Image 1 (cartoon, rainbow, N blue to C red):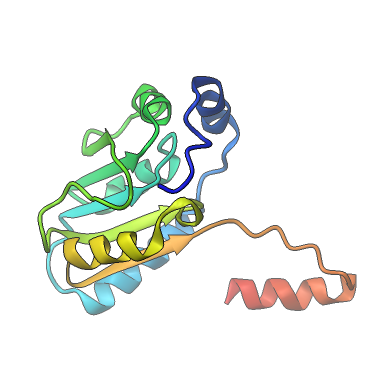
Image 2: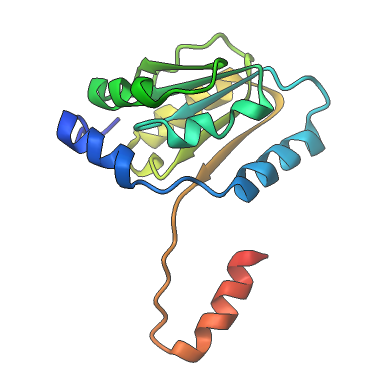
Amino acid sequence: MANRFFEGAAHAAAYAKFRPLPPRGLINRIVSFLKEGYSGNLKAAADVGCGSGQSTQILAPHFLEVTGLDISEAQISQALKSASEKNVTFKVNGAETLPFSSSSLQLVTASQACHWFDLPKFYKEVDRVLVPGGILALYGYLFPRPVHPHLSEKLYEVIDH
């Protein structure tokens, strides 16, 4: 990771308390999209830059194994405190050297995190670890505040579709 801003224990605790969960509908859509191009069993996924683990745990119902990775020991410690799914593990690891065998993951995600990565190195690693037909899903939050309030409805219509 290019920046190590989120490493402190106090920050990790606040992050766990206040960071919103990704919508289940988003995760369901990502998994649905994956199934459109991949016909095998959904065995393994990784959530890179997982922070305190909210976006990692939401993947658990869809895969046999889910691994959350973060460069911050404090974030991983926080993730372990709130871990509730038996098929989810967490590791201290950066985004640029993923600890997986080649062609071993069906899905790699990064929720509100890829702006911290060395992207060329990260993309190279993702190419290495994804199975043929596997996908990379990068997502984040958008809290739009249009300059022209009458455009809000149109903006949300675009976002929802």
